[in-house]
Every structure is written in structure tokens, then in C-alpha cells.
Length: 108
Image 1 (tube, rainbow, N blue to C red):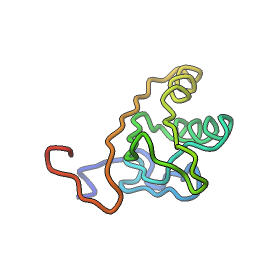
Image 2 (tube, rainbow, N blue to C red):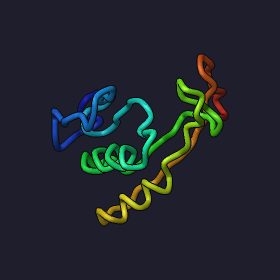
Image 3 (cartoon, one colour):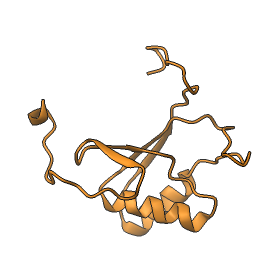
């Protein structure tokens, strides 16, 4: 199975804590990269972009809140700006999944 997903870097560095490589060098998973401040969000996005991440999938609903009750906004605008500054193309997708629920086959 490992041969089905070749990677140029067998042990890629994690861009930040609370992230892990599902498929090393190919698929990274972790918590939301949006921070309470724009500078923190941009720092997270730059770290991801520097690791070669170009597609971002957000599994949260648009009205989800953090532990203080503040709505967690998307990072599409910051992603577009940071990617442009680095001269790369990146895309963001929102595929909302209800917590502790299993999405339908059609949704996946």
C-alpha cells in the first residue's frame, strides 16, 4: 500500500503541533488552522503552504463556535493572500460534518 502513495520526503516535518501525517508527505490532518488573530492564522497557513499543502478541507459548519462561544470563521481570504504572496495556487473546500455523526455516502 505504501508504494501506491510515493513521497519525495519519507519523514516530512509537522508544520505545527496537533497535526499528523495520515499519508506521509501526501495527506496531513489536524485541528483548524484558524487562530483568534489574523497574524496567527496567517502563520499557520504559511507553515502548511511551506510543507507543500495546497488543498485545504474544512469539516466544520459555518456557525461552529470555539470554547469561548466565538464563531470560527473560515480562512479562505487569508489562504488566497498567503498563497499569492508565495506564488503558489491553493484551494479551500468546506465539507461540513456534524460532530459525532457519520456523513452519508452522497455527502462524501
